[in-house]
Length: 148
Image 1 (cartoon, rainbow, N blue to C red):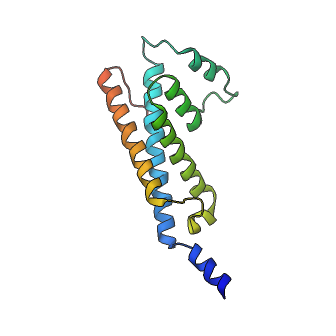
Image 2: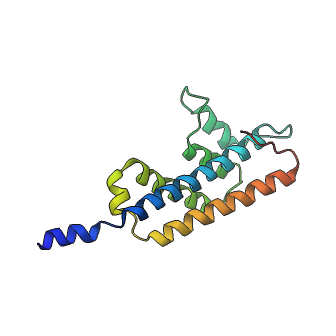
Image 3: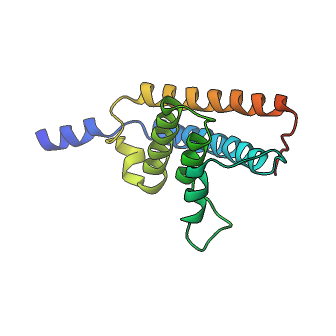
């Protein structure tokens, strides 16, 4: 009976798992959108001069040049000086949490890899809010263009 009780205690409310899945999916999608828009704006600016590390990252991509993973976009944003190490870390943590919830159905039920749910939610919110501000700043520069 003790093992059954322990298993039961490891399972969280299913609605909470689904709510967290939705939250992290939406927040991560928002971060991706801002990342894409900022990079598009930067790379398509007439004055743009790539950093040496940026050129290296782009040259080392695989043959699928139409797609940049979010991890690569985060590296490019960091290399270009758009985001600092703290925001880069928050974005990566949000991406990892989202991936865990999306790709592991058991994780949605147990939340076993999310030790502090409230902290993860806060980190994701701060990352999305910071990227919103970065995009707002980009728009104020005057040459930003929204991509759909």
